Image 1: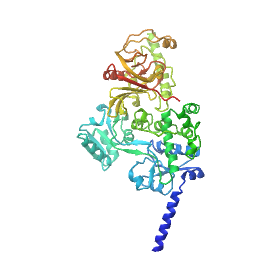
Image 2: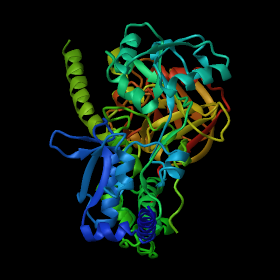
Image 3: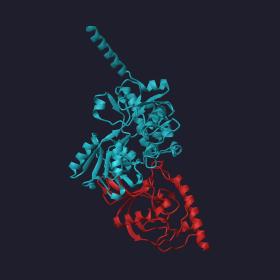
Image 4: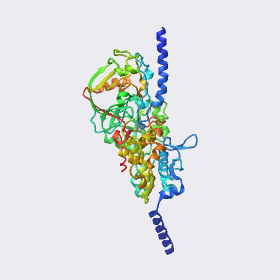
Length: 337
Length: 206
């Protein structure tokens, strides 16, 4: 018994020692590949294309980090994970980074000992309505019949929202998402409510997707972002600033199309970004051209968004709250300096 | 008879080349740049209702839009090819636009100084130089490149107007400033008075 306790204490000490010395950046460099946990299949965010290549919004974040660290966005080992398996896989060190539509919450940091590197996509609950109803916002929903999947937080959120805003919404709870879509398509309800990213996916299942819009209102907070283990601040910085590089690139007007122009630019903030001034890449433990490699490989945040989930993609999600803070949204990255 | 056949052939040809240009030039909001396509004006051409039906991404719709500008303000993002009419409470009515050469020249604050429905059209000399076959004057009405309405911006040559070429919405085109499909410009016309604040924002310069 005593022995066992001692062994446990020793293991604990060992574990904390290894945590203290955690150096994922060096490990990834030595290994030559980035192990990135992704969704097994979610249209626009993470899925294999017809050539067997992983593509998507979350996948591009893995590629961006690999480009910054290894100079090659292709050097990613994708680990498809279920919702249950994702956090244990990260805790056990089976992956270096989790980029899998995961919501940033208190308990996932404080209880699971993980840390979110930022918000790559602000999701939240919204409402899908037929354009013909000519509604400009959720406050105009009045006493609409709302189809929602039973037993989800969406039911509670919609009830709270209705109560707070004196709406007489009639909630029609259905056992599955497919039945929600069918009831709406059959005209048994006027509205569907769930997370905005899912509303756009559901819209594709309707006979005439273009006849329906998602209202601008977002009534709950589901911030999605990349996750790493606690206790490795250097690696956290690499992932965090890779995401911020994507956002800063868009704000500065640096895209795959303008990268050459940016490399020749005389503007100080552009020079700091592309590495023609300062040693910001080195400070992160990366090369001078870390941010250039990111943009060259995946483009800027707007390009990543549009290509995978944006208005011209299959899902057709408008930028909405994910637009940059300077042009109507809330996406905001601290400056590189 | 010969004339009208010729006219149709021209329109068909122009339509074809336009849709090809369209596919290339639809901006992905963030790519930016203003690779302006030389799309000749087609005075007299009256688009079909089908043509006036925009791609869903460019149709008028309420969107999330955070701004410190008061409701009623017009904000134009040339890079995105969108015009926003601020509605307050973090939302705006968003209209798809085509941006002409002049539209990329200037950013800052203007005011709607005059409004006109179905305005006449007097192509400026530089446009005549590029497209010498254009009429020197054309009375307002369907088929007029100025479309259903125009909002004049301050004392400048800039204006928000309609179009008889709806498939140029979303593009950077050779002439004009900010063009909306006719049903949209009529809608905007009915919502904003003379004196409305108009803010024009360009892509960041490198």
